[in-house]
Amino acid sequence: MSTLQKKPVIIGAGPAGLTAAFELCKAGIRSIVLEKDNIVGGISRTVQYRGYHFDIGGHRFFTKVKPVEDMWREVLQADFLHCQRLSRIYYGKKFFYYPLKAGNALRNLGILNAVLILLSYLKAQAWPSKPETNFEQWVSNRFGYRLYSIFFKSYTEKVWGMPCTEISAEWPAQRIKGLSLLEAVKAALLQKQTNKDGDIIKTLIDAFDYPRKGPGMMWERVANIVKESGSEVRLNAETLNILWDGTQVIGVRIKTDKGEEVVEGTDFVSSMPIRELIQRFDPPAPAEVVKAAESLKYRDFLTVALVVNKPDLFPDNWIYIHDPDVKLGRIQNFKNWSPEMVPDPAKSCLGLEYFCFEGDGLWTMSDQDLIALGKKELETLGLANAVDIEDGAVVRMPKAYPVYDPGYDLAVEVVRNFIQSLSNIQLVGRNGMHKYNNQDHSMLTAMLAAKNILGHNYDLWSVNVDQEYQEEIKGEKKGLDDLALVATTQPRVPRRVERAPKP
Image (cartoon, rainbow, N blue to C red; front, side, top):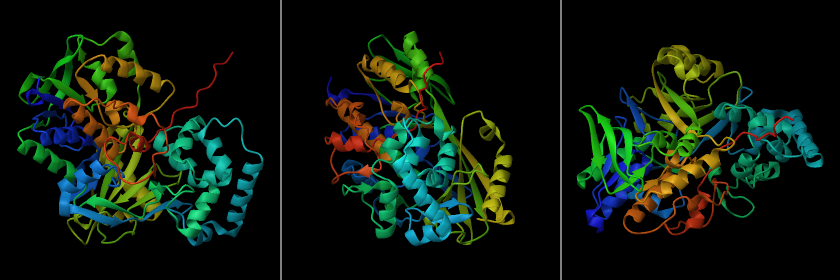
């Protein structure tokens, strides 16, 4: 079959799915993109409410993967802004610059606390906690317990919904690689953004690019380009079944406003969550594959967007909330990402981020109660007065973060082997591969998947075998074939400590 006879079907219109369609369009291949929601962009969408634009979390556009940056710039052109970054940590009713600034940190901590932090660090160096099995031990051994309790414990437990003593030491070893108290102090004093090897630490970058009206602008534009090329992007098209004949996928049964239908194709690319994908195979996938997929778990997320009748609240793009007295994890100030996110210059729009599990107390709260909670917590933090908050909206995002709990990797391997036994389906993106990808990495897996449809033979799973800390971007910007660089963009998420069974 010639490539021009191909009929790819892509499940999901997030960054991965739309990037695959975009790359195929460039090669003259028309595809069909199926999206169950009524909006494109996935977790990178931009929600609009009464003219206010807000992210589902803040999405910095920063990468060292040249094809990804080229695509961003090709699509957005003059609508791609360059933003200066300001982010701080809220702790003990004070604001700490992040990256740390020596004078600010010392003033906020006080001389006595700074001395105690130093003593705690020296104690950790002399008598480290062994064996080093969990997050608390790993971080305390490198920063001292006192600094760990200030800058790591509360926020980490909010994000992942488990005590730091239950998070494996493997995760911080990847996420915080190359950073210690001495490196942090050096960075604060010298304002360096590189580690001892000279690599850029992505967390510490002081500027980034951003679409004029949020990341959804990028994906709405890509969807339009794809449609103008003759491909389809079908919204409100929920995947009900993956039809297969034992060796390959032959079609996707979908549900739309007009009823059910089967979309046939020659090649299939899926970015839907692995668990849901396998559950929808018809006839059913082998029992061991279904069992493996159903064991995969996710951390969910919701944003409470509040319209505040004040032109300027604080200068930050975002603030990390390290305060155990509030449920709030992070605050985005969208006007400081781009002025065009807020239609009225006399007002502001804040995005309050809450991390939760689908079905728990936060997730099931009514929108009105969540807005009331957001008002109360903003006032508690001293960031806004409740009387100045005139409106709000809530957006829930299920399966925002794949969870790496014990046995997840074995489960993914079972699913991967099954998928690879089929000749014409590829998995891409964060949920599609159950990997905590950044946007640029999700796009990159999709670019490689499109190349495979055109006759190449990339192993999409092998690009992630090097488990380097994703925040360190090494070298110059490279192309698709530099898989060593691709590997450095793969972040990790925490897994629970695996404990020996009781005798």
